[in-house]
Amino acid sequence: MRALALLCALASIAASAPPDAKKIIPEAEFEVVRAELVLVHGLETKEPRFEATTKVPHKPGQSFGWVIELRTQKPKIKWREEFALPEAPQTWGPTEKEDKRRISDDKKVSVIEREVEPGRGLIYNFWTLAAGDPPGRYVIRVFIEGVRAATFEFDVE
Image 1: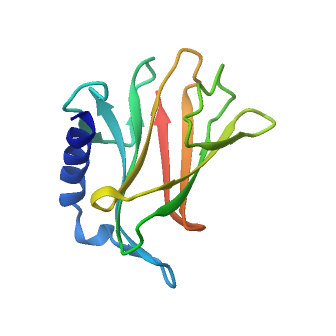
Image 2: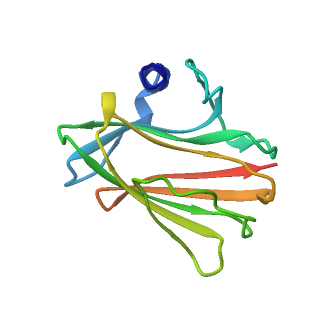
């Protein structure tokens, strides 16, 4: 039930895409309809809420992430997320089973790769701030099928 509520909430974000949010990737097998950074409220509940943002409150437990709506006929999509912090965090947290994750030598960049089914045309990834995560400018770059599809630059303060 939680997964259905999550998809419904994500679909409501996608439904409000402004016309200029569309990004056609030449020679790709997909079109980015919308890409948005969101704060996530109640991720652990049956009805999480999402709020578009450019700033993330610097408080442990605050969830945030990106949502990308795609138009594609592909049954599975490969995405890679490069997540750069201004300083190394105390920990990058546990790795999900489906992740192929690498951490840079300086501990400031996490790279995650996944292959997913784009339910309702949506792909996404969420994070939760932990004690010891640094404030400052964060950058997330998302590549889809090897093509940079979105960049999210935001401040954690």
